[in-house]
Image 1 (cartoon, protein in one colour):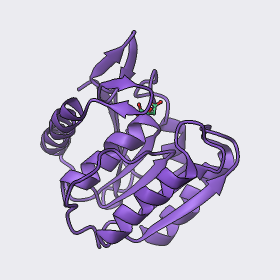
Image 2 (cartoon, rainbow, N blue to C red):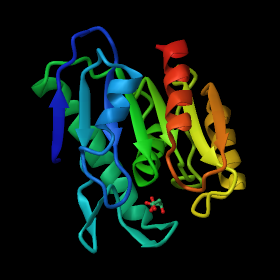
Image 3 (cartoon, rainbow, N blue to C red):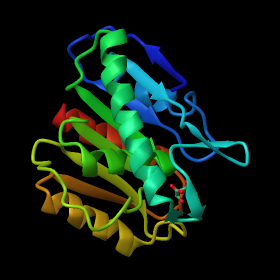
Image 4 (cartoon, helix red, strand yellow):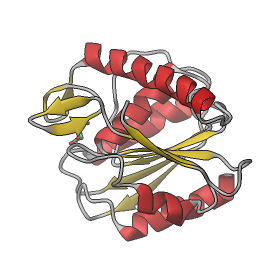
Length: 201
Ligand code: MLT
C-alpha cells in the first residue's frame, strides 16, 4: 500500500498509524502525529480504493452504505500490510496505536472488530459502525478514543453511541469526546485525543 514511514526518536514508544478520510492522502494527518506523540515513529497509509479519483480504504455503495465484502477484504489486506511493514521497518507489530478520520476511522474500527492484536489502541475521529452482526474479539487491552459531533450529518450521535457500546461490550475502555462542528476534525478534538493518549501510553 502507498505509505510514508518516519522513524521516531523513541523506539519504545508506540508507532502511530494514520488513516486519512475520503479524498485524502497519507500526508494529511502527519501534523496530528507530531502533536500527539512527537517522539513516535509514524506509518501513514493511503487507502487502496479510488472513488472518482478520491482515495479511500474500502468501497461504499453510497454515503454511509458500505460494500461489506470489500470492507472485509480491505481489512485483511491492511492487517497483512501492517504485518509486513513491521518486518520491513523493524518495529514491534504489537505496539501500534491508530489515528483515523472518517473513512480512515471506519477501517480502523473494522480492524478492531476483526483482529484482536492488530492495534494497542485507537483514536477514532468521526467513525461509524463499520459493520454489524460480528462477534468482536476481546478488546480489554485496547483503549479507544472516539471524537464525535452532536450534529455530524454523516455519523448521527446514536451511531456513535452504538459503536461505543459495541467496543465497550468487547471490553475496550472507550471514551467519547463530543464536539458540535459537524463532521469536521477540529483542533480542540485533536487536543482531547492528545490528552487521552498521554493518559494511556
Ligand atoms: C465512509 O464512507 O467511510 C463514511 O461515509 C465516511 C466518509 O468517508 O465520508
